[in-house]
Length: 128
Image (tube, rainbow, N blue to C red; front, top):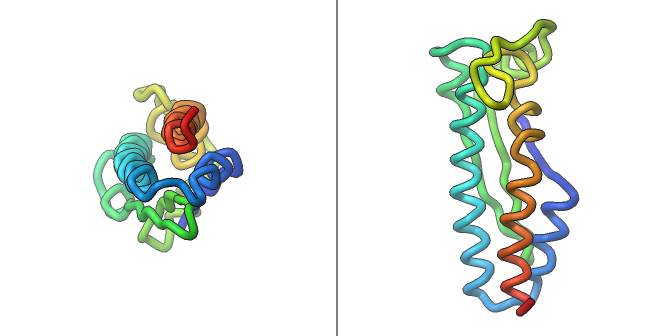
């Protein structure tokens, strides 16, 4: 299991603490959409085009006292070994393509876009 927990994203989500429930619901909805998007992008970057690894990828959105987290998961025991193996990528995707570091490359590539999206939702919640 891999968990992506970025401090900046948590800070944006924590701005919603005490905000109206509708904004928290909107944040969770956006997080759900982004979690699915990230899973699809990671699937496009796994070392093999088909197989158990790509099929095992999933996400869970969790909310705890106004903080919303997107947890990304791989459900096969060799996911970490595949992620950490040496080698390059094939360049077939914007995030680098099929090859190692498929989780981190996708997360790094989309980090700013995701953070900006969550910041906009948080700013709307606090009336800015």
